[in-house]
Image (cartoon, rainbow, N blue to C red; front, side):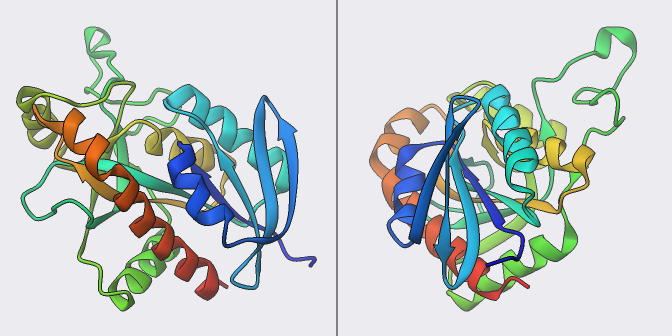
Length: 233
């Protein structure tokens, strides 16, 4: 195959294993301490990587994927905490934009979440990629919401923080990698979006819900990304 690969970035093994087992013609390359798996998925050339948890690992993984494999598009896939009553465990949120809720230079007069250098709080995802993710999610009859995903280097586990993310950023979900992936793609001009399946509610019980439901939620998101790969042109 000569076409550019579709890039898929996940954070955890439980998110990776559902995708990897459906791939064929697999090769593995290790770069920046991470394994990049190339091969075929749904008849398309893909490169898949597990970044690890948090914004720094996610940014390293994304930049390495861009420089090493020149993907035509990157999608960040996995699980997230739901922040809206419109979403329950196992349902999908697709990012129209992302924010970094722990980026804070307000002491210098900036708006909370402002990313210096690109001067944005809400970093937009690619409209075409996001629209196709929504289309295939509808076709798979998975309930979903298009919204803002809030990223930060913390597992959200309190009702207070959950309320803060909703009131401050109008966030629909929270996780720890998506905005770093999108920011890296934004500065490299690579189309990108984020799709997450809800594993918990980001509240006082999120740690127990996550442990119970994360594996099933990851399976849902992997089913959507397979259909996305199949239809992406």
